[in-house]
Length: 165
Image (cartoon, rainbow, N blue to C red; front, top):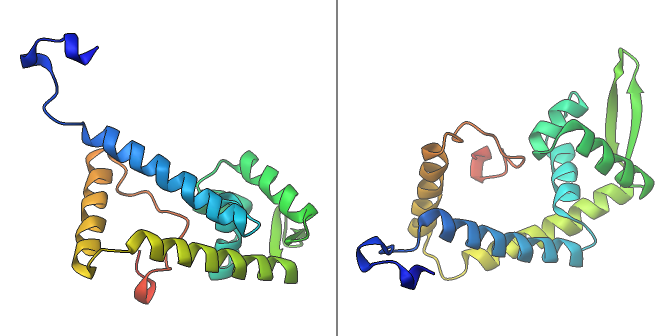
């Protein structure tokens, strides 16, 4: 279809949004596969991670940190509770809130998924010099800012060196 366009109308390069989308899709599929091989998924990993690195005051805050809607989080929490990874109980000081805690199997699952995520991250970083990774991070942040998403907080804030993003 593009070849039928006059040469003056043909794109001179692949749009950055398309390149980024394709790359993100490929990385997401590979990361999902790595987590699945370790007995988890991205939502399970992010819930376990957030419950491990900080005390979350409410399911709404946990949903925001994980990047899903509260009803979607409720679905994931139900499955995780059925699998024995977490427990949920009403907060005695606010019956509308649930207190969510990791179980021992949940802590073991967290350790497995943490190792899988670290191994995957090392795979992604392979072949890059440290300064290239810093530049890539800055470029990705600029792309997010260009579309007005710079103030969104991902579910893994605090995991970088020294607690950085």
